[in-house]
Image 1 (spheres, helix red, strand yellow):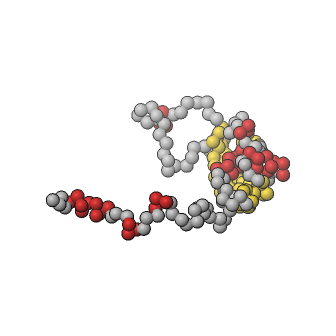
Image 2 (cartoon, helix red, strand yellow):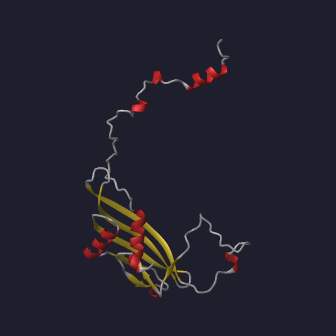
Image 3 (cartoon, one colour):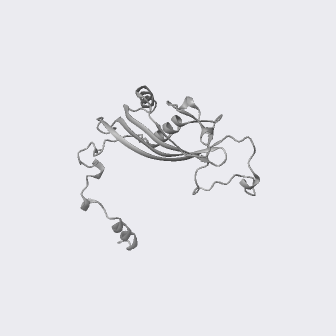
Length: 192
């Protein structure tokens, strides 16, 4: 995760979590929330709090678990009215230092390809230079949860023709020929 793609950064030393869980609360300040809002086309970010637990994972990795709570100011795509969307996102991700050694033979199938089990947990993300950027993780989780077409609760899209049918559909039901009538006409012998 490169920092240039994320609007917020909160770095932690991954090596400091060795044998005990560490609780951490990450709360971006007003300027950082404004940068996040701008990056993700939001009207504003009123609240953004990540209550996380950092746990040791395997030899030198980290597991990040917890909850992200946010109140986002958005504009409804239907009514163009501003509204506040509340998000509560559970997070559980693993991270490992980048390994320069090649994959083990047992990771490859008989054709030399890596097989991925879609039912298993996601593979660990990478810790770069012993530093994990929790800000990037928070931004990534937030971006994945955003609706690209936000709609204010209770607002429905209404058709612009006020219930009037398309001119092609204005025939009464009785005026439309039945498809079964057309089939029975094919079955009957022609009249002479």
